[in-house]
Length: 345
Image (cartoon, rainbow, N blue to C red):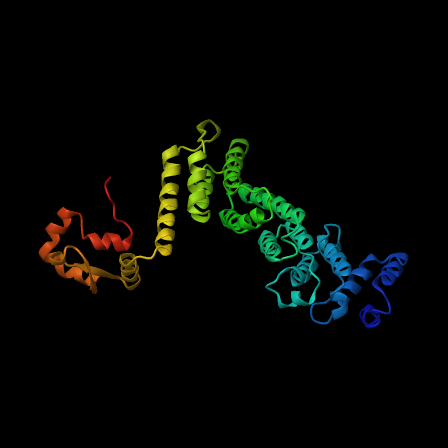
């Protein structure tokens, strides 16, 4: 049978080289036989370990696994098997990948071709973490090219709805790749790239009648939630709203103000995390424990080292001081702890 014969050929490696099997299969007119042979030779569990370290052989096999002209194109079960085999090589989350020679730029290219964008971004992150790859400017430009392709797919989305999950992953990766690009003197402007995302969304909304009017709002929100606060604010300050190219009834303020609020809140929180302050540490501790610091008026408004439970204390005083609290706008520290304190300027 074919299985026994293939097992015999696999056992003959490396004395019998794969190109010999390929030529014999081609002369016999059986193209599928060579694919079966490679799949056995490079199987993630039963394959030959030496063959798995052959970069050219692994590359050839991955190309055949993901080729649109393969037999998998007509059979869904075979296609699923082939894709799982590819993931065994390409995905670092799969323990079997450690045994293969992995050409990272090539694997990222294949991942984009088969629309496995999550895997492609994972490989991109692995590329810039690899000391040899991240020093190659051509490889870095190659990664940026694929990022552009992935962001286009995220903006177009599915059935007129933007893919905010994929877009968030791309934006987050901008933050990771920016220091690497600067270190190796490669041109990369985070703010310009983020602005391009908004422009792509606006153009898609103008040209695609099926595109949801809420996608522009979703794009702005995704940028404000995933880009660094400083870059998000720069993008929003430079963006020009064009109501002639959209069918959305949203005003510029309704689109921008929530994103500005999100960016400012994130920036304030990051600043608070990076600042050493006794008062901020007490507030943070109170927020984590659900308690409020006591403000002692007889000590000039200094924060005491003791704490009350904010919710219990407010319930106890609700009956006696409800009118006073309502008139004064509520307790100061409950607003501070919740992060909702408004200061008039």
